[in-house]
Every structure is written in C-alpha cells, then in structure tokens.
Image 1: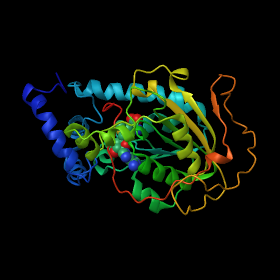
Image 2 (image 1 turned 180 degrees about the horizontal axis):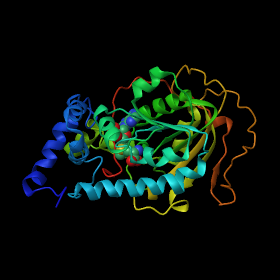
Image 3 (image 1 turned 45 degrees about the vertical axis):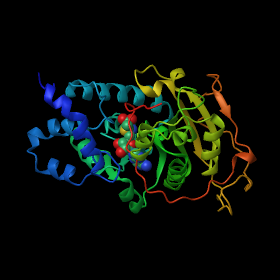
Length: 336
Ligand SMILES: C[S@@+](CC[C@H](N)C(=O)[O-])C[C@H]1O[C@@H](n2cnc3c(N)ncnc32)[C@H](O)[C@@H]1O
C-alpha cells in the first residue's frame, strides 16, 4: 500500500529522524540538503518525497503513523477544522496574516482562502521546502523567519499554533516582541498555550531534571512546557500586548488534536512604547492608555470566556534576550 513503511524502514526511522533532526542547527529538516533534494526531484515524485521527509521527523507525523498519506490527510483535516472553527472567528477577509511556525503548511493553506494574504514562516528551510510542495496557494508565501524580518512586511494578524508550548520563556518572550513589531497598530495575536495543566511540567521542572532523557530533551528542544495563566499574561503584556483573553480551545472547536486541551491566547498590539528595563525583574511600569472597547470583541464575554484585563502591573518588562536556539516543534511530540 502506498505510503506504508516496511519493517526495516520503521526500525530505521528513529535513527534517520535523529540524523535529519540534528543536521540543521537544532531544527528538524533544517539541513540545507533537504530543499536541495526536493529541487532536483522530478515534479511527479516531489509530493511523496516531501511526505517521506516529514515522516522522518517525530515533529510532523506521529511515531506510529506508518501510512504517510493517512498522516497527511490527518494534518489536512485537523488544520482545516482549526482554520474554520478556531482562527476563522478572528479573521477578516481583507486581513494580511502571518503564520508563525507553519511547518508543512496545512494550516496556512486552510487559512489562505479566508484572508487577503498569508505569509507563513518557519525556522526550518527543509520544512518550508516541503510546505511549498504540499500546500501551495496563490495568496500564500513561505519564508524563513529571517527573510520575513528582512522584508519589513507588516500584518493585521499573527497566529502561532502548536509552537509556543515548546519555547522556553526566554525564546517565547523574544518571539512575542518580534510579533509585536510585525503587527500593524491594533493588530491581533492568536497563540495556543498550555496553562494551568498540572500534567505538563514547567520549564523550571524540566531544568531541574538532571536525568539523561530530561537533559537530552532540553538539548534538542523536545520538551513541552506548561505555564500558569499569570506567567502567560506577564510575558504577553511585557511584549506590549493588551486586551488579553485566554479561551479554552475545547469551548470553541471540536478537534482531535493536542491543541484541544490547551487555551487560545487572544491579544491586541498596544501602541505604547515598551521601554527597555534596567533589569529583568519586576518593577518597570509604563503608562497604559485606557482600553477602548474593541469593535470586534467577538463576543467572548457572551460565551462566558475568561477575560484577563490588562493592568498596570502586567506591563512588566521582560528583559531582551539573544537566544538563537530554534527548536523544532510538534503537536505530536508532546513531552510532559
Ligand atoms: C508542530 S509544527 C506546527 C506546524 C503548524 N503550525 C501546525 O499547527 O500544523 C511546529 C513548527 O514550528 C517551527 N518553529 C520552531 N520554533 C520556531 C520559531 N522560533 N519561529 C518560527 N518557527 C518555529 C518548527 O520548525 C516546526 O515546523
């Protein structure tokens, strides 16, 4: 059956995955030979080669998913549901949108018909090459994070799905500042986050784990970090966002995916300068303008969803960082 791996392939997959994983600066499929291989593959074979490459990474296909076509179909189906029933609530037809950590592009391709344009970015050149093969669309462009930054483009909406739980606080804080910079004034932010779930270890707990597995997971960015709602608020407000809501995703969408047990963080770019802090500690507070009632509050209150008002104390400064770790992430690599 097409796409079903042999026993040998199944045994070799973890090894191959590790090689592919580590070949590219800590991001899966990040090695330069991955896009080069796809470029020389005859057009009629490219889709199958792209799926085979994705299957090597534990981050895109589940380890027990031996039928690559079925795995691709699962990705397509779940991402279509997320685009329609989750992100779709917050998108307008004339929006320019940034998809951060787009992976193989199933979500970006599902969002594209709903909006004016999608720029889908990832740290992995290899997965971007796969996405271009598997999920092209006329108003969808795949770029590296760096190329997007250099383009000077801005957008109305930034969304980031199945990524943030793998980021350390340091990397997440830096990403939030990048997203703030990419958004037009008043732009919207949509990110799934793990909050208040005792089953998910916090970053501190992972760092305290001196076992081989724990350290290896940290080294290769294979962890998933749980956070408290307060911690998420601090990070997001510290990057210059306001009008924060944390909405249980299960209240919005019925989907068989890890994100269903998480929360959707909804926030808006505040147009106040976030001043550099003398220290990364609590204390620096900037003036917050009165929050206007947004026209498109999307009825969260009606839905009885949790409202997290921005308060002055939320505008703590998160110290600038310069971490260049580019973890590769997956909804399928949930490591509690
Ligand atoms: C599990 S995939 C999620 C794909 C897609 N968002 C989805 O939900 O189908 C996570 C992706 O995030 C990418 N990634 C990791 N860290 C990133 C970062 N700092 N900026 C952009 N992308 C990142 C990884 O390379 C990987 O392709």
